[in-house]
Length: 140
Image 1 (cartoon, rainbow, N blue to C red):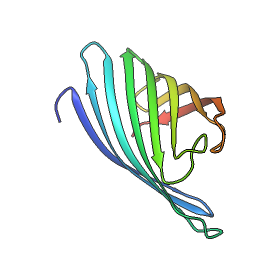
Image 2: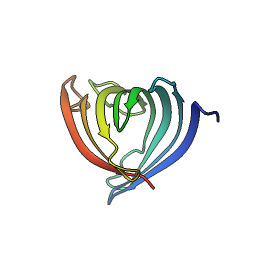
Image 3: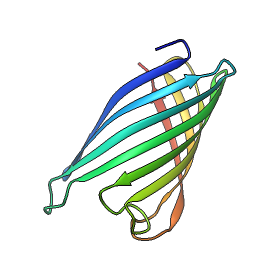
Image 4: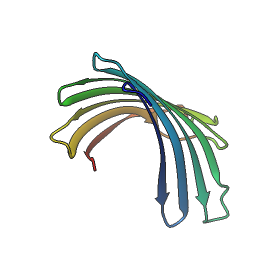
């Protein structure tokens, strides 16, 4: 939209033996000249379940991000709030996550990253656990 503001629509599709999940989203991001950025994303998750006569699941997901880019490194905090038509956490139809990620841009194509998150254990308790992720992003 401008040099500092980016608007990005997107669509994610996941498929398995018993479920197809459709995830359209819209993300907006503002990049400050200092390397700091702030972003927000709305995503609608629709899970079409085909096994055992299960109900389809519909979730509204809101993500907020704040990050800092310095040279080839990026540090990012992400808070996610989910509001669903089914029980998600602590016998309620809502859930949340916290994630912190560190990424290193090796070149214009490859960016390895590590991420630590706080996520729900089960939908019927208030238990939470730490999740660790290691990954590699490929940029076209």
